[in-house]
Image 1 (spheres, helix red, strand yellow):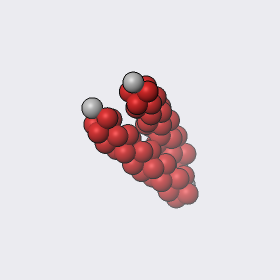
Image 2 (cartoon, one colour):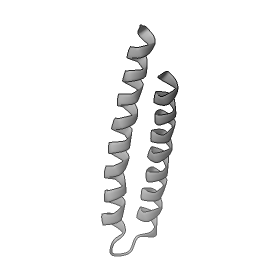
Image 3 (cartoon, one colour):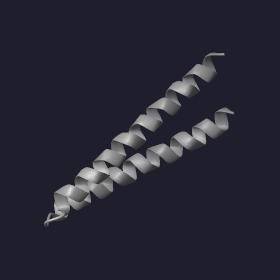
Image 4 (cartoon, one colour):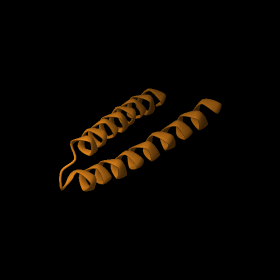
Length: 65
């Protein structure tokens, strides 16, 4: 069970890094849609970070038993 949660945690961390990098690149490019696209990516980053934190909490709760 812990193996699946660790795998999901790794996926969530990769998603956080990917959306962060994409959002920063989008912001750096600028243009008319730059800030709007960057904002969308940062919202997804916050969602993925929340999922990653939840998975860490679950993993810690399972490890305590």
